[in-house]
Length: 82
Image (cartoon, rainbow, N blue to C red; front, side, top):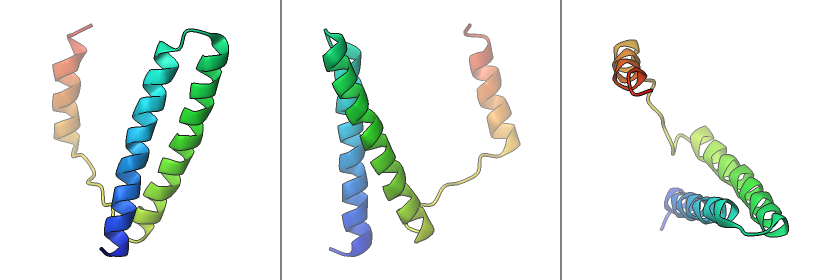
């Protein structure tokens, strides 16, 4: 397993953890539990962002800029749903 694969696995795991903490925060029954999950979520999001930046800097996580016609199409599709 190379470094890119390891970082990708770490990123996917971190994203999964963020999802769990988000649901824990949403479903928490007391303010203290909510705060604990919210703090853990924020810490995990910061970690996820650091991993993403590292991978992006190395060219391991590329994104594609959306073209204006695509953005307009999505905007028109969802503007009428309000």
